[in-house]
Image 1 (cartoon, one colour):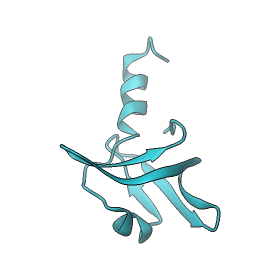
Image 2 (tube, one colour; image 1 turned 180 degrees about the vertical axis):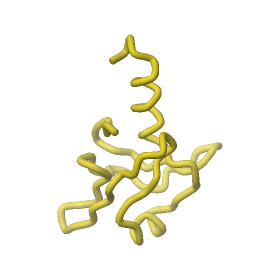
Image 3 (cartoon, one colour; image 1 turned 45 degrees about the horizontal axis):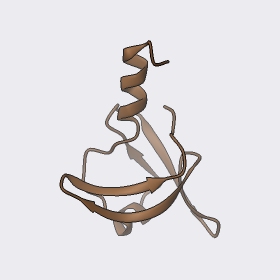
Image 4 (tube, helix red, strand yellow; image 1 turned 45 degrees about the vertical axis):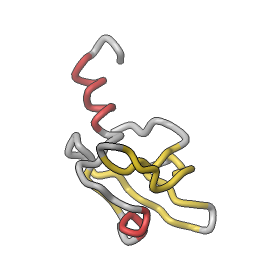
Length: 77
């Protein structure tokens, strides 16, 4: 995949949302559009908050260019 620059770009853009979303806003969503244009499913249960199959392990980490929610694995489009 690393040799296929378009595939790599697609994976990287699937890790990012083009808006500042706090955990409060994420909690009200079932899915979200990622920067590559694909929809990622959000699941909130007693086990935690998941985007696709990745669990969100840290919420609302403030960065200079937005808000980061840390996940425990790379999600694939």
